[in-house]
Length: 65
Image 1 (cartoon, one colour):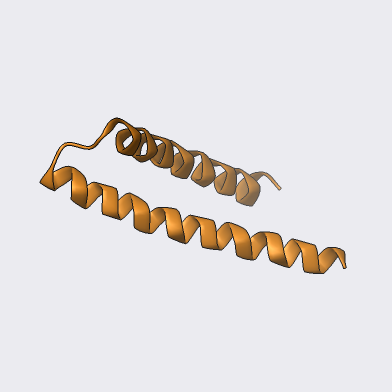
Image 2 (image 1 turned 90 degrees about the vertical axis):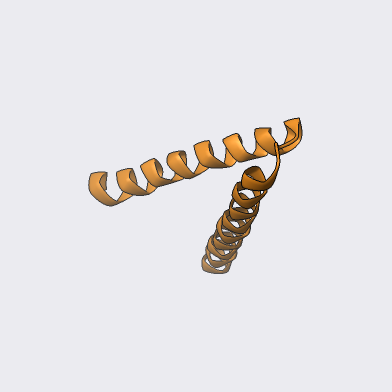
């Protein structure tokens, strides 16, 4: 049962990463066409920070453990 929960967590994480990547790409294209609203700009910055933190955590899990 614990393995099933871990698999579900990994699948959910992957889906969240892919969906935010597509939204980040959409915001990047929108930014080229027009100025982003305050909410869009906030989401754009937060997602970029989240990807950097995710990359650091993956790097740490690969090289430290």
